[in-house]
Length: 377
Image 1 (cartoon, helix red, strand yellow):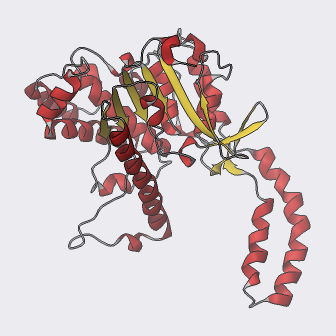
Image 2: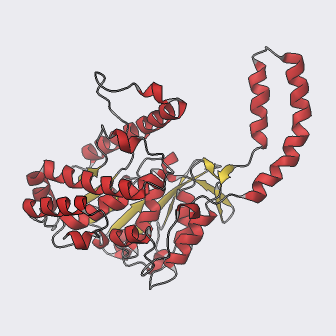
Image 3: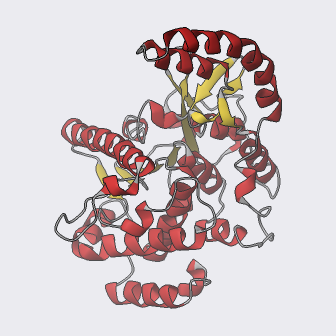
């Protein structure tokens, strides 16, 4: 249905995925935007689009939860939200795992016999690979994430229903069986609970089991598109602020150690980031050509941030450092082209605080990582 149900869409905030680490980075980036904006906040956008981990952050911000409050919740502050821990994202589906044992036990004799008679044959890999068909659909379950989001959005005057939100929220996920994109919140009467949509969009294949909603299995929204920026542009947004927490590392070959020396996981992490980032960049280039009237502000980590790259996507213990990097990198990005950003945001009615004030806030927050965005102001 047309976006007029919610009023016209002028400003949109788009949050891409990136695991727990990506969501934490986005919290820091949004805290920086709140420190930069003089006459508005990230809670005042007309439209929010959240994919994967970005869906979790977008669902909270669309419910008027400030990024500073999200950050505080990570450190036992229960004044607004229930305490958030990494274990809530990483629940194990024991029933699914236990159900695999009989299937594995039944399959192993045949596999052993085939290996005994065909050892050395290339088909041995196919035989071993056949065991994977008996494993669960995912190592972990998104039930813990869904339960936390549901608990948050059903208390404190917030809502777990798309139709009750003051601002529009779109959460894309990928239908596993048909490869189609499902956009939860597409129409205001969508009965799907926001918490279920968040879990579906964040169901990273292999890591999480697919999330079943009304008989349909869903996996991570980033499987189909990196950030789904077009959802905002097609609905008339003239300003799109896009936070992308994942980008490939670009090393100085003369002084840096080759990534291959980091092992198979490092090679896989870099390859994964290359694929997602290239797809994102190509999409943004196409949007720029087709919709020159729309300004897109892309905020992402520095291309040579080795320390952030080394943080695993599902790491929770370094949360404050990741948030701090999201905050500082976003501040630096805006300051690097301050005049251009002042003019760009002004076209959409947003004023930035003076450069001197931004630098002062950034220095204070760097000295006192425990300060909230309002404290740093």
